[in-house]
Length: 307
Image (tube, rainbow, N blue to C red):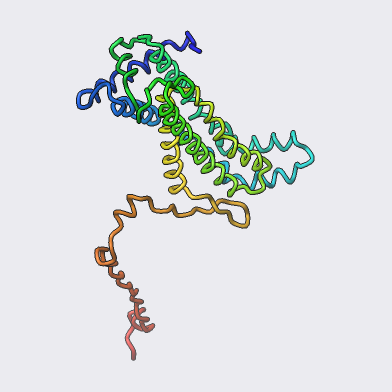
């Protein structure tokens, strides 16, 4: 379904696709599936880089909520018979610490307009309609492009050959798997941090249901499924990078977060020097001994002479 008030965004996405495709066409066949696959992957990466600050904001808010977990548990026990008061106290605690429970929705909300725009542009290509500033030449090029033997704008149900259906079905399966791994990575960390969270069971159910939504992409063009697989892989890498640099907080007896040293990343491991290459430890600083003045006799202090 095309939303007229988003025509400006459809035009912007179509223009970016045109620029990226023209750049790759200088060294590759403009009608090849590789050129168009690289175009969609590059567009996805550029979009994810743009919303990277939102991802950091989401993860920092999530980390603050994890650090507040012991205090939240205490509030739940204290007001277990008064749900309204409990929710008010928990929200006041989050607001005081600068944590936003809805922060996790920001990257998803930011991606959704791009997803809709990609869907609309690819649908226009499949319908042989040079809309949103696209030329007929670009539309014909996209329709001729084959990714592993399947047309770029084809859907599972519109594919005319069994081989094309198999290729699109494999991409849908990969999309389902990467969706599951992305949700599992986040839910597992959340459940490990708050094992008695009342929402833990719902999160676990969501983890196993989420891959099923990927099968709705059987109605999506192959190019859009490729976009979704790319963004899932990017999310997996982002979350792994953040979780490795920010381990789950540990708490002392009073429920205060204890700082934990982050695990070394891949680059740090590669740059790690051997014991022979490491610089020798600095020599110990010389111990300063303070010289105490010797005690003078009374005659010397007063300046008198002995008789």
